[in-house]
Image (cartoon, rainbow, N blue to C red):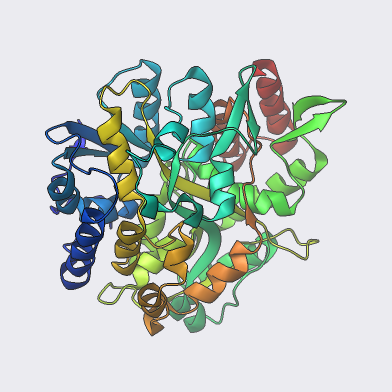
Amino acid sequence: MPRKLAACRGHSANFAKITLICSTLLAGSAMTFTQAKSDDINWRQFEGVSIVWAYDIHPYADAVAAQLPEFERLTGIKVTPELYPDDSYWNKLTIQLSTKSPSWDVVGTGIQPAWDLAPGQLLEPLDRYLNDPKLTAAGYDYNDFFPALRDALTWKVKEGQIEPGSGQVWAIPHGFENIQLFYRKDILHKYGVKVPTTPQEMSTACEKLKAAEPAITPLGVRGVRFWSSIHTAAISIARSYGVHDFVVKDGKLDTGLDSPESIAFHKDYVDMIKKCAAPSFANDNWYQVVDGINSGRTAMAIDSNMFGFWNDVAGKPASGKIAFAPPLHAPNSKNFESNIWIWSLAMNAASQKKGAAWLFIQWATSKQVELNGAVAGKLVNSPRASTWSDKAWLEYAAKPEFNNFVDTFKTVQDRAQLAFTARVGFAEAMNGWAVAMQKMVNGADVKATLADLASEIRSSM
């Protein structure tokens, strides 16, 4: 059953809870309403329509849900959110769209899942909505989204494959992440552990922590048999080893997952997981990673940077105790690498309420709604440049309890980029990689397992 969310009412998913963001958010909502009334479009042109918005259970969803009453007052459109846990959401998204069910109108997605959905005409291209002055307010300012994020969500579909860089707009950025190491300052200080920079240093630190305090899990990292466990720590560290998911050989696309660089990475990474991760690694998703770092059961984590921020919020058990660093890198590399993930809002091509769906997407990704969510501490990495120059957000993010969040974000973002190759078949190949990772952690030979993985990927290309 879906987790249905009434606007401004809480839901629980481990640490993620909606809060009513009273003074700041309500003031921001009033500003949104005043601004919207003066826009040059008719916000009530689809009054009386009801739409469904589906999303992962996530604080980014909380940021929008807390403001939904304002959208409904503004437009007369009723929005029913359906939120699901991370791993089940992506499976449901594929089923809903591939069966061309009209029951979901607006969906949350990322770039990589959208690569698999767009060629089958399962997502609605958004260009005509963006360019229609009756549907898009002049003040929406699409160019305010960071260029790299806009470019990443724009591509052509040619002969069933993705050609990035130009073409149609398939989704609108809603929030984004870069990958970082974040850690409990109190725990590392107590046991005299330096912040690691390589998998080898991490393994050494983990052994020291285990010897000093066996009850602590040294490192939280995702391990589920699903591509989400690859797109954070694994791919970011792998890229510093020179690993590529796909490469071009003799003019043809081929996988790089059985390369010497990949074998070297996986040997180091698997050794680190064995020494550092929780026994529950194979079942751990981001919910468990966040719970561990917040409660102090886990000393360090490698995952999306916002997770540390959310747990540093004043009043939380870990407030002020979590600091940030770049992700680990290969021992012979001078630089770290960081993947980016772009949470986006897209339209179901089978929706029968596309006009209302577009007004919702436009509102939910507007300057004021993005800013409200950021200042409320939910929508941390806003995709809009205007948020990052706004005094209210910068003052909030620079509070002492957030330690070095802003500075580390800027440092990592300078090197952050999409670490995957744009292609249809992303999910199948990366799910296979996640399964292979579990096998290797459980003792399977690294070289042989990667050879089998590469063979499976080649057979499906």
